[in-house]
Length: 292
Image (cartoon, rainbow, N blue to C red; front, side):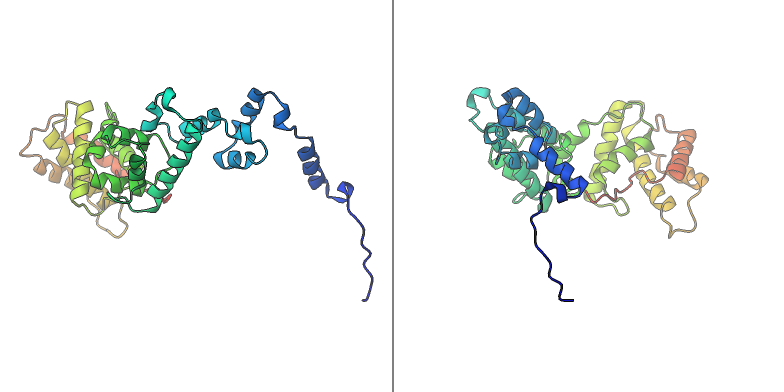
């Protein structure tokens, strides 16, 4: 007790080896301003938008280069209407400003429940970054992984024209029906435990698109089978239901529902195969657990 702790100055040799190594690397890192511009841009093309914003405090000119911000735009959003802007009309900081606008609109879209008044997409539309055309909205949705799936679905509830365009981008030619349903509905992560008007419309849109690629199926008969697969999935995949529907019961009930339609490619063998697929693989409309 009462010992006097002498003070002395510490230099780089007093630091742990790991910290000394980091300090040495930092001191030895070349100043990008002393390199040819094309090399500096090449180096900065490997950083994120956040890192690029930090870099502008050191290399302001390089970090503001339009080629870097254009790359970031296309990496995060492969399409938006503003990309069609003629080069002659692009301002000095067109791509950097566009990135900031797209980022802000995406954050707004993911923050608020989508409706006509507060959707981030409508913010982008008001700034002429995205048009109101269903084709452009669909391409924007498909061209980024940054939008929350639940909010995309909410947009579809308000914009059936966008939903139709979105479904038209899917090709189910020669796909086995349960696999096609599982692939499509997994992307949207919509619970099919309880059907409502929107979900019935969604099933109808899917069925029509499936028939486009598989013309041997009759649309009326396919609608019956699609709905039957939702009911079958809810039955087989619900642990609360003890007495599961058997294959014989499923085929019998579905054929009864098909009695007033032209069945086309749907027969007892086909229904047996779709039952087996659901029984072995699981729900045809699985819900994602990633919270997107």
